[in-house]
Amino acid sequence: MSAFQVLISMIVLNQATADEASLRAMQQRVESVKLAITDDRQAKPKLVSAPVFRYSDELRHIEDAGIWLWADRGRPTAAMKVEYYKLGVHPRPWLYCFTSLAPALVSVDWPGERTFNASKPGIKWQSIADEPAKTRAARLIQMRDIARRFSAEILRNPPKLERHQMRLLTRPLYRYEETSGDVLDGAVFGFTGTGTNPDLLLVLDLTKDVGWRFGLTGMTAEGLSVTLDDRKVWEQPHATEPGQKFETWVYFSPQN
Image 1 (cartoon, rainbow, N blue to C red):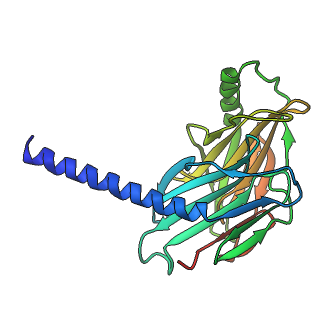
Image 2: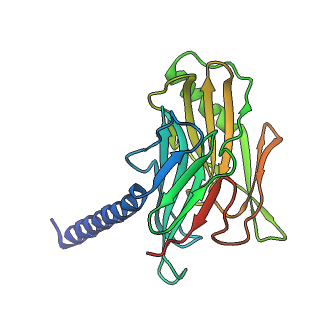
Image 3: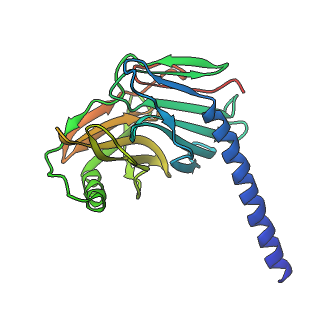
């Protein structure tokens, strides 16, 4: 092995070690969170063991980040971003963004930091008339096709609100695993306005009674606007105060 190859191997190894350490730091932060569904005693949301997506964001100076989900009986009930910013960008390098994905009320506690109690369900379901495919494999293809029918814009720089088209991430962030009750299948898709940072989540859900339905939630302080087949179906206003609490989501920089 040449000296150059040795150098490249050392760089790759050091990067892998740094990535592993960064992941452990984020994982520990997420594992300390306590989540509950306050108006459903049967619900027992559990943290999905690993981040469903890792990303960085050069435009926002985010060095490393991940998004984690909690699920109950196969269906996702909440999502949380953990982002680490380059030194000097913000007074505190870490940022959390939490959003409810539950059709019920959630409460969340960051030990030593703060609590958040949603005042509304995180997801407002809207139906889609498409006939469900018969097999699990075919339904994944169908969900990808449905997701492509959505178009999203991110609205920046109020009050002008410059509109920028968002991009659907190539793969779903999460596919429902074992489900129970009336839930048959589903997936979570991400839309990004910068790089691969999922600023918007689309949840597709298949139930025995309703069939296909969808819900949307933002994971950014910027404004969002979503259309399905050229019909506006959802929007989120621009947030103006860092740390401000909202009805279904919250973001803040932890003390440590």
